[in-house]
Amino acid sequence: MSQSLPPEVRAIMEERFGHDTLIALATAENGIPSVRTVNALYDSGAFYVITYALSGKMRALAKNPNAAISGDWFTAHGIGENLGHILLPENAGIAAKLRAAFASWYANGHTNEADPNTVILRIRLSDAVLFSHGTRYDLVFS
Image 1 (tube, rainbow, N blue to C red):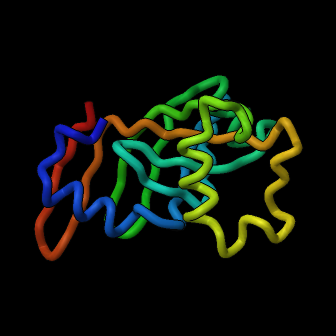
Image 2: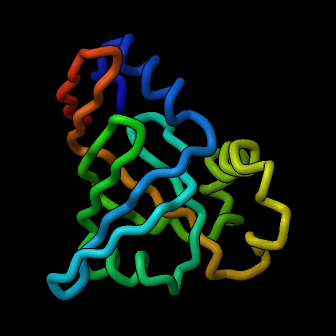
């Protein structure tokens, strides 16, 4: 996805968000916006979050997949997608990256992989604004 980004932007995104990062995630349900802080990992044009399928954010995204995120001089729009249970074979690659990124807290009882409602949320970015050392980057993800 992010292959269309200039190399310097890819490097900034990886440095800033290619690890356990707190971001603000905004959704809207019935015309009412909600925002919450989530642990996320950036990878190839998307942010990934481990969450609970029955949470408010997932309920809102099921009705309206449009999302907005913000963190560390970065704001973006994207589409929230439930990739399903973390142990699905098709999630093995990103699940391994998430376990590694979130290793400091992942096994402390907060995440129950045996629960079928423990899912991966992908926020596929569409557009963003990134600031770095006085430079503004207006980004379009493809």
